[in-house]
Length: 32
Length: 350
Image (tube, rainbow over all chains, first blue to last red; front, side):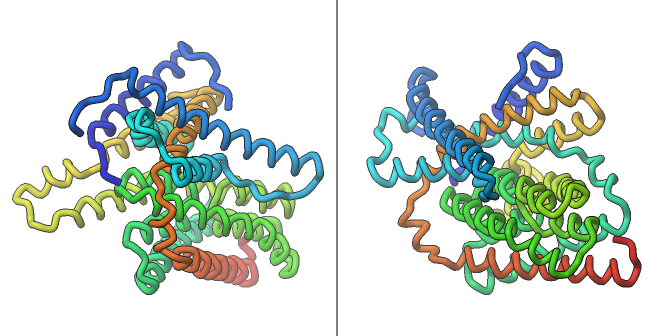
């Protein structure tokens, strides 16, 4: 796999943003 | 990359990932439902493997039309986002819940698995990265660990597909073999649960193997398994540093800067989320929500891995990776069983 380094930070930002949205109950319940 | 794709141009590919991944999820669910309705213990083949299989079928038969390619390439973003979110499931505190002797067994299992798989991989001349994936998969927790390590060490899609398939196939086998052996040896619930938690690699299958023995055994299996799982960050971190160093062949002047440049930064995100979950930043339902979100990200990821996997490349590897996996897993199961058996006979601790 040729690593696309720009994805690293975007992934961290996206995941932390999602975690914050869930933490402060902005995002509704996420089913599976 | 010659040009940056526009967001709209990504949509067809992402939709394809979602469709294939969702098909994988539906397949896993319908098999589980069939097993429950007919009271048969079917091996739990995760949506991850189905998504890979469906992606594989599409790319190796009709191929991926150009309009989808930009979107399909985002699978790496979903992989890394999913790994960071996965951190929420790995509480560092879980390590401490297990108790002294059992904890020592976890440490021994980790060391033995990594050493054994690495030696076997070298002996059967597997590619070094595939060997790393199998070692991490067998030492910690099957699919999640392979998923995390794939991103961290830049492993090929073929290697990751193969390692996941091998670990899951062996897990399915142990689901049936472990309870039979446990009964034959007359192991206690504690001893059997500990064994299943140490030697079965996928969390779902370790839990199921424990539950097939008894409820108490399932509890110990889950405890031992979560203690193993909790080490994922450290082991993946170690491997990431190892591979980042290894690519430094020419002898770069500023080694720290080079290591940092090669280092997969999202691993830090994983550790941060894991730390936040450990100190209680999220409630239980929130942890479940974030874990679900990581599953959705992996659903997209592994459809992409399948779409990028070339069957001809995989066939070049032959059956050797499966042989390494099988020999290694049998040896690990044997060693951990001997340890637990000896401890229960001599110390009566388990």
